[in-house]
Image (cartoon, rainbow, N blue to C red):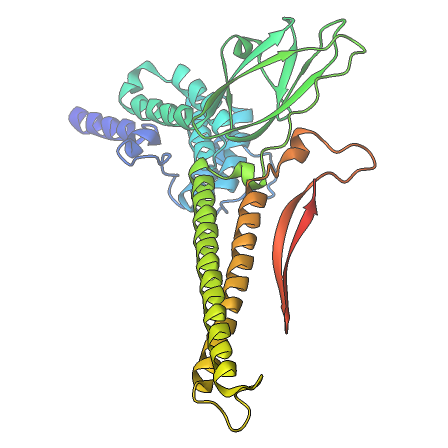
Length: 363
């Protein structure tokens, strides 16, 4: 009988181990919830207030169903009622899933610091989650002059001890505000930090009544924002097209002039042989067909030369306009009453018997 009772006692003790041990081999998954019951996974109206255990179990249900926002809400409520390593662990993992990396680092750090000494096997999984959250979070080193300033990042206060090291931040746009030193004003900065990136920011508080440093200029746009390789490709393409069109226009023009000269010589010979100014009027001379062919070739090559040179001018103007510093406005803002410069552009106008090129813009 003693052996039977001892066996029952051992079995009951094993069944009551924390659920994390049952999920240690399941990867980034919080401990499974208690066996399903008729209770809903969301908080419901009860006669008494919710307990930390009920919120914790409901959070496990929501996490298993993939409803991370609800799980975050439930785990947060449980952690307010009971600050324990297991609630902090599941809360931190959920925040890691949702990309709330700063909060995930805080809660996973709390869990690791308060983990029971006899749970070293499962603690290693939490340490891995903490390392993952740290590797994905941004790190911001703040250097503040004078010392003693209070700072916030995206509205969240920065602890004093964090100012002596790295401030863990969520990747994305950041708004940093520092102040609170007697005799000095408040300084505000904005910056962008990517996942896993570390940046350093130096802030000097302005004297009381002084104007804070102006905000940084907007990022480059237009031509200046293009990679160097793209700009180089566009440059050489524009130069190449302009050069080929120019050569083609010159060759066509020379050919047109040569053909015109041949046509004039043929016409002079025909006038001399027929004694008429219009040798192709009936009766037509024998070389009228050759003269007509030469005149047609002259017209064709002349038109080709004209429009090829117009195209060369257009390509050259486009290349020059594209290489013009299009981002001058954000480097030197326009003065009041002026609209600033605009990027030049070209266009070709063609109509029956008329052709031309238009270059428009302001400098």
